[in-house]
Length: 573
Image 1 (cartoon, rainbow, N blue to C red):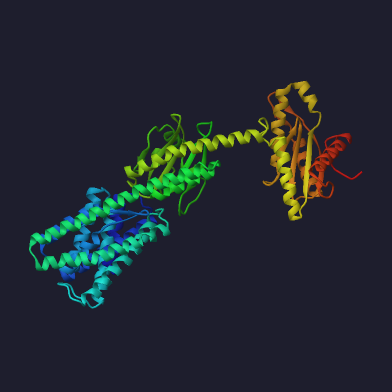
Image 2: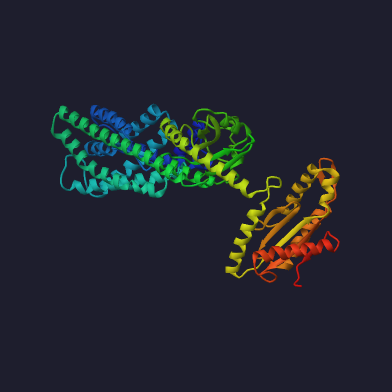
C-alpha cells in the first residue's frame, strides 16, 4: 500500500507539472486511476518478468497496435477500436506482461506523439493496464492456460473478453464523469451491441493469429496481421461513413425542427440538441447580440454537472464578449484563462470552440462549446458546428425578428407596457381560466390627476417622462403574475388574477402612495404627481369582461369626482 500511495503522490506531481486543466478534485481521481494502473503494471513486471518474450514479435504487435488505435470507430459519441484482438492474441502467445507492455506503450505513443496529449496518454496508459490486468485474472480464474488452443481454453477466453468489456465500460464511465463529458447513458450503452460484436470477432481472430504464430512461418504470421489490419481499416471507414451520415441526419433534424419554431429559446435548445448528437462537450452557450454591443441575450445553455452554477453572463466578461463578436472565422481556443476574458473562477472549463453566428456578413451572436481539459476540440468538430451554425443563424435571426414584431404589436412603445388590444385579449383569457377554477379576478383602472395641465404647462416631452416613470412605479408594486397595460392617454389598467376587491384595493392604495410619496424626475426637474384609481371584482361586481371594465371605469370616475388622489371600490347602484 505504501508503494501505491507513493505512485499516486508522484502522479499528482506529474499532473501539477503538466497543468492540462484539471481541478483539485479531478486531479485526485485522475491520480488514483493512474496509480492503480501503474501499480498493476509494475507488479506483473516484477513477478513474471519479460525473459521469455520474443522481441521481434512484440515490436510487430506494438506497431500494429498503434496503427489499429488510429483506426478508431465512432458510435454515439463513444470511440473504440479493434486493439482488443491483438491484446488477446498477444496474451495467448506470451501472457500478461507482454500484453500490458504492448497496450501501455501503444497507447502512450499514440496519444503523446500522434495526438500530442500527454495527460491523456498517461491516463489511457494506466487505463489499459487495469483493463488487461483484470481480463488476465478472469482468464486464469476460469482455469485456463495460455499457449496453443485447446477446448478448455475457450472458457478462459470468454472470461477474458467479458471482463475486458466490463472493465472498459466501467473505466469509460469514470472517464466521462471525470471530464464531465456530455455523453448520455443511452448513447453510451447504445454502442454495446457493436462492442459485443467486436468482442466476439476478437475471439476467432485472436485464436487464428496465435495459432498461425505457433504453427506456421513468419510470412503467414505477417500476412495474418495484414489481414487483421485491413479488417480494422474497413471498420474504421464504415464508422466514418456512418458518422458522416449521422452528422447530416442531425443537421436535417435540426433544420426541420427550427424551421417549425418561432420562439428564440426553443430554437436555441434544438440547436444544442443537434450539436450534442455529433460533438462531445462539457458546456455550451448560445447567445445573441442585442442592439447594444455590450448587452447579450443568452438564448440557450447547458453547462452539465458543474458544481458552481451561476448566471451565464458572469462566465464571460466584456473582453471575451468583444473578442467573440469581432471574430469572423470559427476558432478553437486550446487553453482558456483570465487573460482572454474568461471567468475561470466560476467554471472549470479549460478549452473552448467559438463559432460566430452570422447573418448578411454581420455577427449577430455565437455558439461557444467548452471542455474541461485543454486541446480537446478537433478541426472535424469545428467543421460540423460551423455547418450547423449557418442554419442556426438564419433560424435565430428569424425567431428574434418574429419576437420583435410580435412585441411591437402588443406593446406600447413609450411605456414598454402592454397596449389596449393585448390587455383586452389577456383579460378575456384570465376571466375564462378563473371561471373554470372558481376564482375571482380584480381590475384596477388608474388615471393621472390633472395630466392635461402637465402637458399644457410643460409640454408633451415632459408628459412622456411622467408616463414612463409612472409605468415603472406601477410595475414595482405588482406580482409577477399581475398584468399592467396602458389603456390609453394617461389611463392604465392592472389585471389581478385570483385577487378579491379588498386585496385589489390595498394594491391600488400601495400604487397611489408610491406615486404620491416621491416626486417624478423629469428633464426640467422634479414634479409632484398623484393618481386616482377605481377597483372592480369579477364575478362579484361584474358578470362579463365588458361590465368589469365599465364598472372599474365608473369607480375611477367616482374617485375623481370625490376629490382625486384616492382609490374607490365599485359598488352596485
